[in-house]
Image (cartoon, rainbow, N blue to C red; front, side, top):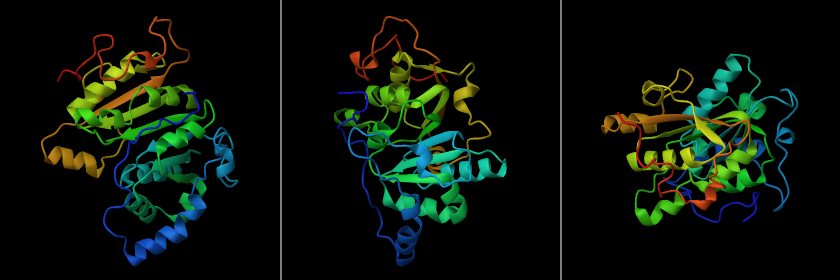
Length: 268
């Protein structure tokens, strides 16, 4: 598989939950088309700057959120960056139609048109279409853990996805992950520790136990806490250059096997 080819695996669940109300259908029909990302033909590259109308600098930072759920985090980030006067643009991939409608309902329409573009579909295809070194930050928050062993291949975080992220993230760009599933936490740590292009920024337990101030709580986190599950918040950086550690490409050792002795989550 080439570096630009999307992984041929299903990493998402349902496309539609509860039937949309008439108001939600109207909102989707009116507000989504100006924001919708249409991918180019296979093998061609998406030009992120061309997705946005003039107004922000063409070289403004570009952030990606994969699977934004009900949109609480993404809406907060967009509004917060606008409030601070930071010229950050956002692209987001989400398969779940109900989540897209909820995000659209949270945002001022003019602000969304200025700063946000949405791809409705498999985020792996969006990653494959992005140009090299275009992203300044990536969020993957509370993805489906696919807990059954036979479904582990559907987990979004894996060797193929990390290879794609390493390609599209700028050197020094930040990758943020969150999960409340211990098995998925171990999986993410094993994958990322083994991958030559990322390093974990944590220096003390509070770095993964507590959200930083610019990371708002979502309903997924609230549900986890109510159920007695402790979420973990991971922050990684894209290396300036890959170290010479002798591991070779990440795909040589599939996630789920032990890599560098990492097969469990952080000690608590």
